[in-house]
Figure 1: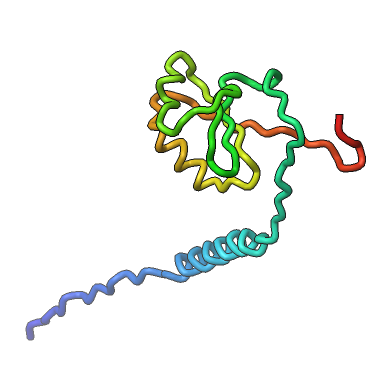
Figure 2: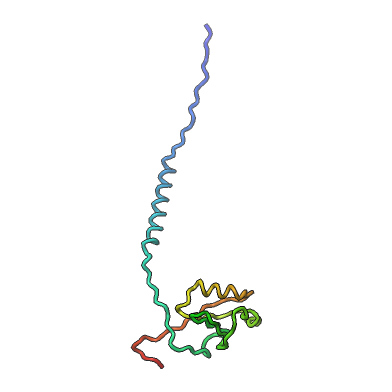
Length: 136
């Protein structure tokens, strides 16, 4: 009698995915905790600075002052739109003091229209005095 041997049945290795699922769940929990605290803190109040007098001689030069009606002055001299770039050829940095009512988008549009090349722009703010201190 001949003996027949059946080939051994190899079982495929099963991958335990429970560790991966636990890692994904923990990452999701951390993500929602982190973003949830950012979304919940949307009640930030901003007090805009107020300027009563503008001492141009104490501020950095060149100083571009932009009023609420988008009129511009460079170091106290009124300038027309589109004429700023040639005036700044010798200055690597432009200091900008904008009216508190002027929106950031409007200010960025004004500066973009001037087509400034290789000029660093720094915003300047002035600290106002408290109402009870009086004015100098």
